[in-house]
Length: 479
Ligand code: GDP
Image (tube, rainbow, N blue to C red):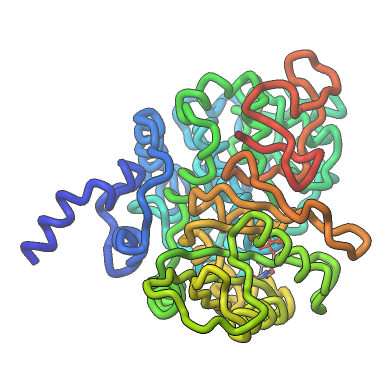
């Protein structure tokens, strides 16, 4: 025990440069403090200001979270379906952001990271609609409280809310009622679905201090990474710059802070890593996501092979059997993920059937092939999380364009990916892939509006660190 304590003290990085705090029960979530043997050095360190703001947010979550008197009073206001006028939420009462994440797990993870940052920027308590599987996947990030919405929350079927409801931000701004009616409403609903409207997206220009701060409850539905849009909003630019002096690692740091796999998922991760990846000299991740159907496609296999050979990520094979294998050959483990096993079997087969020119030994592994997306089913989602996490533990990574699963895989690992372009007309794109500009995820449904000039604009040209994505020309990402 003594040596162990000593290790803990000297292991500054066990807390990820101050991102994490001590104080959780270690056994209930092993991945939180004991992932060091599986971790490379931090790609980016948190700023002192980020660390300070995280501690403040944790205190806020504890002071106002489920089970507190403040929470009970706030819920009562929802029950009476009226905001109590005369008590603007700035008087120290607690304000909440309820997030309804939805779609696949990659989408939900990006939504949770974005909502957390927004909550921190606007001093709101983040509460997450748990859906059917989230508590099976993630440990609690905040000590002494829960970030999941309590089951007795009075508003039901949150996933059915849309921008059409009278409480929606869309309706408030479209009808010019925003400033006057916020205090009258029990909550305000913000729809940030990737297909939301012009008026919904004005939220991205909103200065929370003007009127939204008067809404004790903000409900939000989103399936994506809206952080790049926050960096376009003049109201948050200064604070964001202090939090993230380097703009290319926002997701990386938020994800390292928020997402700690439960023991069950951690078992999936570590058993696979120890068995198939640990002992190789190098690890390459290849994430295959196909949006044209779950059957195997030759043009996708060709794309993977073209990308990995052109970028010198996988060695070519020889045609004739070499007489002698060079001694001391390096080994490379390839981790493939995908719903189908066909791509994996082909690549593994080719490195079994033929030697490599370099003499390198290439082993190819894929943890699962679920065949079809079954979002919300706990075991299925656990495998998905384990695989995103395993991808993040590789040294280099090739991902499929448009895939939030891929964004999480590389973003969590602090890895700048080679992105394979999404095929059109069932043909291999040329070039097949390209190195991304940063490790950040892409926002798929960005605003097209300049908040300062108050008119439409190319939002990829407004500030140097928000640019269009490699894999989606209209998308936005931080670089
Ligand atoms: P996206 O659709 O590629 O943006 O990623 P999402 O994660 O949001 O949704 C895809 C869902 O399909 C995942 O969450 C999984 O449920 C499933 N899925 C897709 N690819 C894989 C994979 O490689 N492995 C596993 N286990 N599941 C996958």
